[in-house]
Length: 624
Image (cartoon, rainbow, N blue to C red; front, side, top):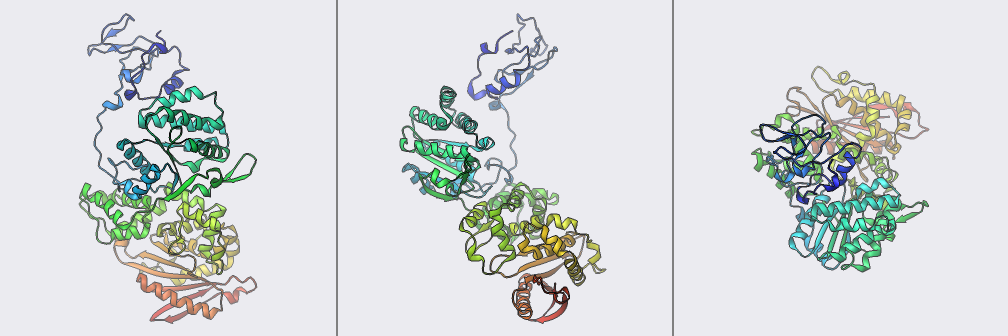
């Protein structure tokens, strides 16, 4: 048997698997031997095939990947060739929209990553030996930008730049020893992958088991920076995924090494995550809360990566036209920008869904229409991909609840009492925008939020679409609102108490009921927010099943208001708001629903239905 220790190590560029992985995988399988393939008859007693390759007589004989063959059986078989990654022929792929992970410009349509931030400012911060923060909501292109920055800095030759993702250490929670070892592993792996550097691995081997966990990261970087020939720029991603004492130790070790830069510590460290480091609320092992600002008080700047603008979306979609010849009809780009507000993942996801997800549009001879893009939007919302699902899950958090519940219910007089920290946190998550006024970040999220909050209610409501569709194929809204009025009278107390967002209970229950009916073939658009004093619903119902939204569509406006003034004043305001919305969206039908939440008012007084005329429109008014 040939010992694995005697086998010549493969040169680094051809290594397909880390040596530790081979040892871990094979350690339990004995006997083991590593053999080098040889077409000639060898002294081991094997035989040569007609093709010139050897049959192995060794039990479980395994060759290192770079040596060309892998044999995993004790039977006499021909070895299976393994082609080194560097020698494989990669077939070119058609480019597509990126919806997962960093953008790769060889396979994805892309906006130049470094054009999305001020490179002059970045380079000045690095030249001035600054430590700074980049933050933005998830899937906005942070990692793509960091990788592009690393590539640019290394190409310029003035610095050694390294990207490292520290998220694997999240699993360590507050275990500093485990967390620091995982972070050091990530540093070593990144240096190996991006810089072809094995010096850091040697340093890690020297200090592991000798250095305390609380200084492991600092000492590794100190020794490495002293032995490399250029100042180090360290780009650390997913920093805010770290938890508890691991995060505290991580930040404090970087702070402790800060005075030694650039000769014995990184000249610049960029911390990247969803939130600004000053907003970190870290619970240590003693259950004390430590702010990120106190643990990392050396930050000089906090940069935020923004959304795409309209022109960038046009460039992105234009790349699809250049690649495939498929065009986008007039108005489609404007619609995408309006619905996404430039959120990068949404813009890419809509592009992918309409061009590749919808089978009919895979024929590149047909242009993408506005109706097709609206259909793609609806499918994206209904499918709830991971990006949308993660945002919906955030609605359970208390800090998010305090902000979003007031936007859904629009409780008067409470706008100024929203905690600044909560507003900043929800904005950092990407759920809201603060300017020009506080609002849900984009119309797609505006649709996702109430659907996520009402989904379990919607599926339990015993109502069927066919009950409200007439022979003329139209939704009979008067009958539907009569049914909801009775349903609300009988069930509102029970259902509203089950909502996490009880403040907006009546509005959410109405939306769940309506969504249950309209899901049979139509769709609902919603508008709500602080200062609006109402929730606007636009129900759209195709009248031709074959043409769908490409054919005639019934459009119905339903305005929801809470009774806070006198009934007549509320009706007067509501009629004006309803007709304004009808004119804006081109709806022929309009309804005003007023919820009276006064507990001492009898249902006989709350419930009514009547018709009103306003500005040339006939509006149905329902009270409950």
